[in-house]
Image 1 (tube, one colour):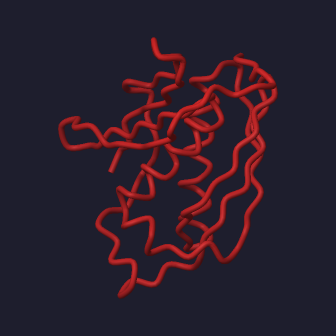
Image 2: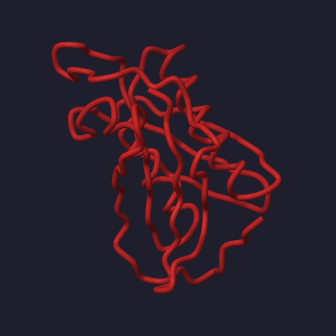
Length: 149
């Protein structure tokens, strides 16, 4: 498991999608693993709707565990998919803290409003396909996987 240094490198967090057959890839890039996980969650929201359409009204605490960074990302995204489905919510802001094999996060969002959010697809879940959490040559971190839609 990756442990975060006290001083985070400076980087502009961002997210992106990448093509994969009938499914969609999500990727988050950040100064550290936690920031990359936050950005991957935003990329996942962006598969469903424009993240700026989702008001960060209600916080939700999420706790996950995994023996390595990849399985922790897998569990994080699938927990978010579960929470979206069972609570009928979308999330647009995330704060992730990772300590060893444990992730603790806050996700802020609101109940789905179909006319305003205009959801495009329903995400079935994160997959092991192209699942990767790694440090890039510039010192930033990348977290990615393919979502089953």
